[in-house]
Image 1 (tube, rainbow, N blue to C red):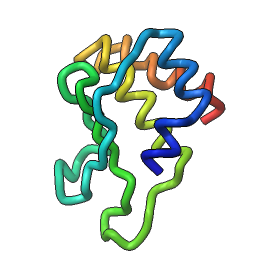
Image 2 (cartoon, one colour):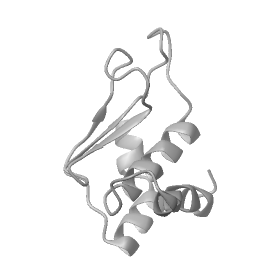
Image 3 (spheres, rainbow, N blue to C red):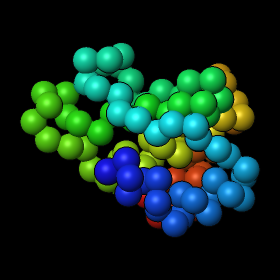
Image 4 (spheres, rainbow, N blue to C red):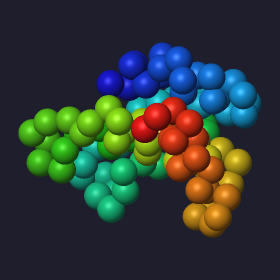
Length: 97
């Protein structure tokens, strides 16, 4: 799923349009920060996404994971969870998520 996300044409378009970059896209395992679905480290140096279900018995939907990626991309610019991070939701809508 991470490879598919990193090659998603719509995600790449948004990243290019906003000049977002991600050094490493990796998994956030269910036992790591169980309260989070994603984590942006140092403004995009690394983005970690929870792709597995909490019980490790399957995978979350692509659509849900892409929506979380969009939210985390917004943290490349805005660190706090304020009104600016809603940009992630707007990006997700643009992608049809």
